[in-house]
Image (cartoon, rainbow, N blue to C red):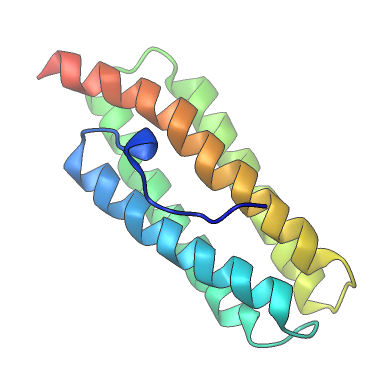
Length: 133
């Protein structure tokens, strides 16, 4: 697992999304660090809950923009959001119950979710937004 760092590769060009992504990335990095260095059920839980809440808000903003700009892959993108949130909730519950590997599984999930989703799906959507302006 590498370091989660805001980079040009994650830049969408949509200010609201980029600001939210950067904030979520910093929070995800802090959570990942806590998950891999604290004991089960430890102090990572508040960060976990905060990241889930910020992600829910971000997805709502993103989906609102998708509807406004009539994004043709809206249903597909929304389904990915639902999958991400369901998995995040499942892992949060597993971690809060003290599952041994939940922290490491979550750290891997954060890497895959944050970087891959922003770098691929969100940048594709952002291209649609920018071409509509």
